[in-house]
Length: 184
Length: 140
Image (cartoon, rainbow over all chains, first blue to last red; front, side, top):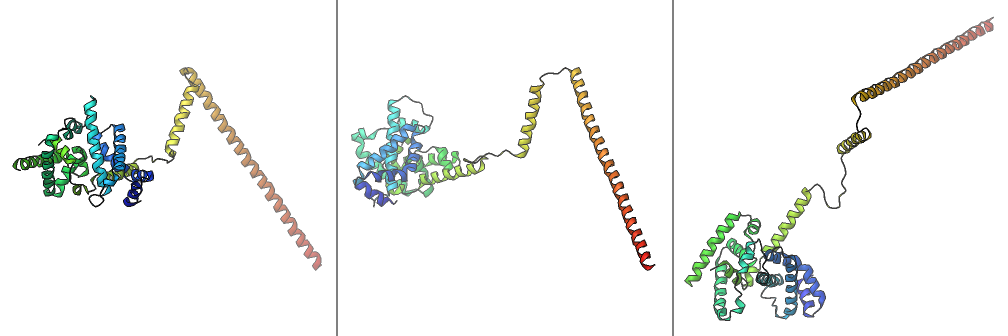
C-alpha cells in the first residue's frame, strides 16, 4: 500500500487508512519513541497512539511536497515523545538511568514563554543554516543526538564508531555551534 | 548553548534534513543482528530438540547406575563379596553349560556326518557291485 493510497483513505476519514498507516509505520514510530522514552512501555504506546491521533486530526494540513509521510510522522512522534518525557519528569519523581532523561528534565517548555518566541524562531533559522553547512557525518551525529535523542552508545553502534569518538566529536560540534550563535 | 536547548530547537528542524533513513537503517541493522544471532543459537524456534546418540547412551548409563543405587542402597562389604561370588559362580555355570551344550551339538553333528558318509559309501559300493555283476551276466 503506497503513502498516497493511505492518505486518500485518511482524507476521506476512512479508519482503514489509519490502520494501514499503523501497519506501515508502527515499527519506526515505536523505535523513535522508545529511543526517547526508554523503558516507559505504556508511555511509548500512548505516544505512538497520540501520533496517529494528531495526524488523523491534522491530515489536511499535511503537504506532501514539503516532506514525505514518514518524515512528517517522525517529527510528530519525536516532539510528542519529548513532551511526554517532560511531563513524566514534571509529574513523577521517577529515577531514569538514561542521560537523555536528565536532559529532558531540564528542558525549557518554550511554548509557555511567549516573549522568547521571536528569538527562538531566529535561533531555529540559524540552527538550520548551521546544520546545512555541516559535513554529512557531523550532520548525522547532530540529528541522531539532538533530534532522535539517541544515547552515545546507540549512535556509536549505528555509525560504527567508538563511544569516546562520538562524545568528543559532539563536544567539538557543540563548541562550534556555540561560537557561531554568539557571533551572529 | 546547552544541550537541552539544542534538543528543543531541533524540534523545529527543517524537514529536508530529516529526509534520511537513520532510524530505518537502525531497525534493519537490529533485524539483521537478531536474525544472525538466531542462526547462531542452537535452538531455533519451532525446531524439535533431538538427543544425540552419545548423550542418549550416557543418560541411560546414568539411569541404570541410579536405579542400581536405589535398588541396593547399602550392602555390607562381606555380603557384597558373597553376592559377587555367587554372581561369578552363576555366570561361570552359565558359560560352562553353554560350552557343554556346544560340545554336545558339535559331537552330535560329527557323529551324524560319520553315519551319513558311511551309508553313502555303502550305497555307492552296492551300486557299483550291482553294475559290475550285471555287466558280467550280460556278457556271459
